[in-house]
Length: 497
Image (cartoon, rainbow, N blue to C red; front, side):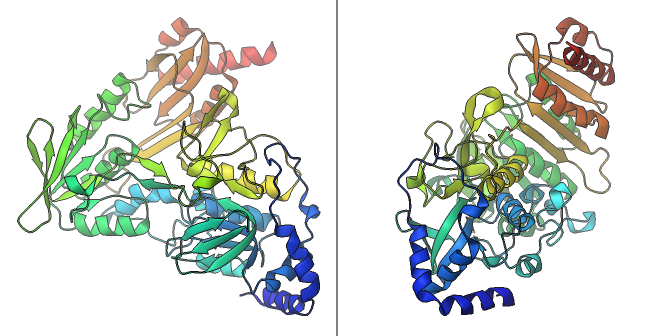
């Protein structure tokens, strides 16, 4: 514990009667936080709170973040930036590591040893956005208490108290739930827990998979979304016999158009990956040694495999916080534009937050690192300052694959906006291709593969401003560059009207 915190505790012990009075500030209000005005950070005297820190036998924490992923790391940085972390902030995580940039686990972390794989501390937050690397030492230096490998198992909303697996009790003033998502799993009865079957959400999961890949010969990746595509690209670097199996008609069906998917499927096949689409899985089969040996499909055929990686989506990790207020449509915990839940003093950010997507006037839950970062920053600023404006997020997705050393082609695409309406695809995927989504004459979303930094910077401007665009003119573009220029000129025209 930092010496400054020790001194504060000593001072607090000498004024216990005052501490007990200030402890009354921790009692929950029964007013609706979604409509109450936001106080400024000066409305709760920090010195008074630190005195009550000692009055509860060191159980009190002014601010508690539950979760150890991207959102927690970026929230911690924002607390530090506002001078409100030292001796006041506690982070509770089930992992053994300080918060890190989780997307690395299905990308560079899976590269074989000779391809310069990513390893901690190289990708601790907040290096993903160009910030300082927040190692365990960083948290210690900033006076942030870290409780590792001790997840929260219960919450008492009335008493504002958390109980961890080890039996530790934490009384909080403000609680930020940043528990993220957990990987969807196959049931045990169909072989979901067989040795050699892997799911990836944490470093320990990725380490176990790397151990398997080092001995594997035939790999099956179940799922044709982000995780499946990134993992299959990584196994190519290991020179393994790889098959992707998924039930949809084409890769990344929730975003890609059929024609765009076909281009990526061809790229994967050129790299030796076999693709089985429209296929259902009956069960995973074990060999005589109990280890996974194959994937049995709905038609009765079996795809041999000594390693199976399942990437079929994720679920918001809301336990044990269901009582805080679930959203039944998109899942997760319902919050407002400042990430306040329906319970005073409790916030939710990142994957677990069901928030108002202002730009499209609907409630959304976004499982993406960009939202994790931005929601964390917005939430903490709203908590600590007089900021009252609603979170205004523009959906953004990206992926990078085949980035390992020696790859004949590195692939990197970005998407901004909403994939609704008609589509116009420009480019031959050698290497560039762009897809534009147009609804009621307005540009709603845009995806670009292998663009320049300047071109990528244009995408969010187009998606946020949604200019009226001439579809026929866009279709006549002879190159991606020309198509983007047409879109940019449409935006400029609207700006002068």
